Image (cartoon, rainbow, N blue to C red):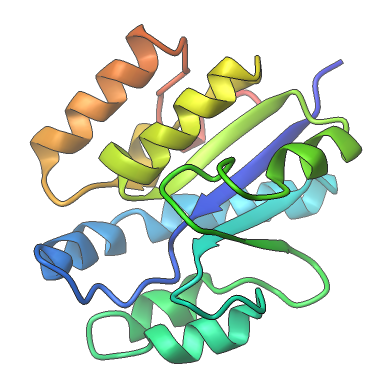
Length: 179
């Protein structure tokens, strides 16, 4: 019997970097499918794990990180997809992969998870690196094509192709996933 966890990667973001505005625009398109997945997970009592860059706020307090990241580009995104206190898990990460330097693998083992649905940004960096590390740890992977965003469509498509062909990830849209 499989137990699945939903990972929401780097959606609390300030978008203050080169191509940040483009990424913010692409990110807005993936919010609804991610929230639909989150709703299904909540209904089934399955774990939802936010994992986010820390912005040098090492206390792992998502409210502080949201406040720090909130600006004109990010405010709507953060307000729509923020974690729910006492319901969602929240971890911070120091680098691109959600596994590097974090307690994620230990948490997943404690929860008896063997399948991951990866969502978030940037698809061609943090989601791809997380998928690679998950694959090496022998997790089953689902990465819905409509739930990741990158700075541009070409990079996003390339990342999806790599995750499907190299990491054996299922990449169909979120509403077609078998949960």
